[in-house]
Length: 434
Image 1 (cartoon, one colour):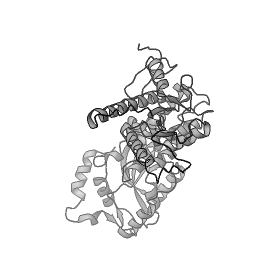
Image 2: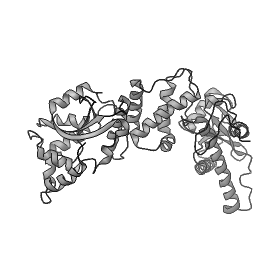
Image 3: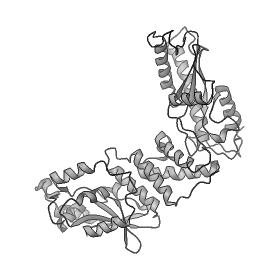
Image 4: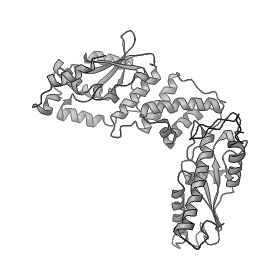
């Protein structure tokens, strides 16, 4: 690896304090990058000034040096490599980058192209800068500025994909890979075969292990913590979809939103059809206060004769009817869906009761708010196949049924072959906590 102290020395010896930004711009019609261009680039773009672009030892890539390379040699590497398995389709910024180069020239302060060499010193791939390499084809320059990384014991094709996606994310305004890029890359990682495949009847432990591998892959690609990833519906959906493709039967069911859940329930059961005296609706169990706000919105709309006319076939008599809320959790945590199900719903209900007590005791006095039996948290949607022997899969279970299962199965560790890792819970099926 290059001596890091050289960057400081190069900075003071090669960069003029008076020449301004022009000293970093190379015209697209120039014949080649010079050694002076290379030294200026290394002085401002290196592991000291931009460490996030170079620290990939854990993914099997160690920075060696930055060099000048003939463009044909770089093209040969591109032809033999993975052909951009880090992004779906062409970079949407390609035209703007090309236009910027044509109008303003090449700014050598920016990242160029990153390549990989194996243990024998053979160049095997470009893992970042494919778009830049394509843009450079429209210039007259016969060589390229290239940063070289060598493989170490952690190197795999899967890890190379993770590093490539992470690099792409660094170039985005948000500094994070897009959901589309992550989804594409996860499938590419699975396609390598390096992480194996689920058997079609894989049990909960095997699925949890596989899901953890994919969560950690997203962690490497995005730079986000595991808890952040497991709390994001988009990431859980990506992993759940990939796992379901390998299983005979879906183990987890994702809910897009409350409207979609009610459509699903009405297709599979006649129990939740709305009428003039009963109204079913569904809210996410993420925030009790938000559910209360949504209920207030319904309260306003149901009292508006223009929105809820007695002559309408969808009319609901709010004054006399039953208003029933069904909770859903969106997309289950693929690593610990059972812990997610019980803890998320329990946390919601606890916060719900606190909100009602606040309204009744401190916000409004003299009325029994919260004791109106016409308005209720009717139950929760059960989206986990492994709980089917306790609570029916893809059904709505009442709050009484939920709390019975929570207290007599979940807390007592009586769910077979199950250990919770969700949140702060640690409940082992072999360890009763009576």
